[in-house]
Length: 178
Image (tube, rainbow, N blue to C red; front, side, top):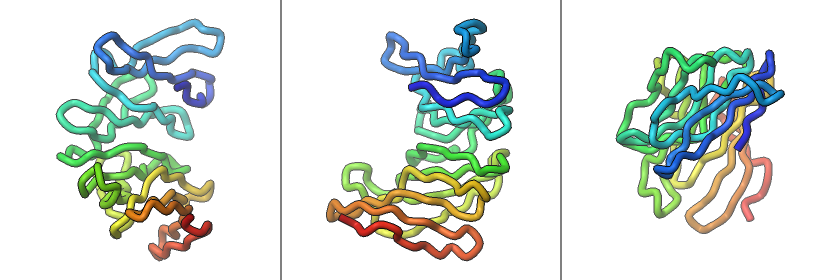
């Protein structure tokens, strides 16, 4: 998939390779200036630009699936999570200082034990945001950075949209699980 581009208009996208993996590539909107940012990494997930366009976050599978950040030119690659669990779907805070992502703390096959975590863009201050027996995933920050919206999938197969207030950790369900 193609990912929206920041100023000055560089497009980041996944390029599939013959080994079955994918790499992050960038190009200008006119199709010029192609570059492979992740080299020979076997599997890389969808790139997410920081709001100012200086950084790219993504998931990468080496031994485990972890959240990484790198500069927009592919330099300064940093593994933010370094754990044995699966971490996926990072989302930048509006000010670019934090990411929120999902972490599979239970068995992936039963759709429970998927929680939201946040981490600073330098890899410090890893914080668990949700703790429950359901799947919390596909999170996004509010424009003011005060709330995080996310989808919930319960073991009973019900889905809902929830919003968490960052300061209080209060979670409200904004759609009924159906």
